[in-house]
Figure 1 (spheres, rainbow, N blue to C red):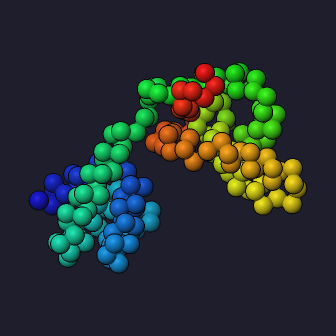
Figure 2: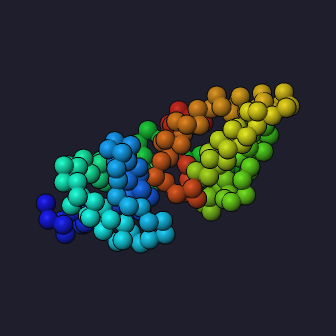
Length: 180
């Protein structure tokens, strides 16, 4: 593979994805390309190219990792509904009996809104609940620990996995049988 082809392959990834490839290489080989925090993506790609020249036996591993990440990005549901899922309107969400208990967790972080501009529960709401649950699970208050436990039973990890790749300000995907 030519250096230009290799760099074109790596250029398909985001800087975050390149960093993940970097970490996986380090864990696998105890060696990895130089990671220059704050450098441009092109500079990071050049670091990978130089590293492969010194470690040609690891080229196939990098190509495999990059292809997996490119495939994962292509499969990520970033726009529109996905079969077997649906969006939940914020008004319907507020009608739930458990909403008063969830309200504090959903609005936990102020860095993003739990509601989208078009009136649906946002991906950010799921991350807010997860952060709140993590924080309150060690609370001194038995009531807050019980609420954290109830939120933990919502299987937030599965919801975050389902919404992986979506921006936090987009409507969250929920399984079809949830609040239909």
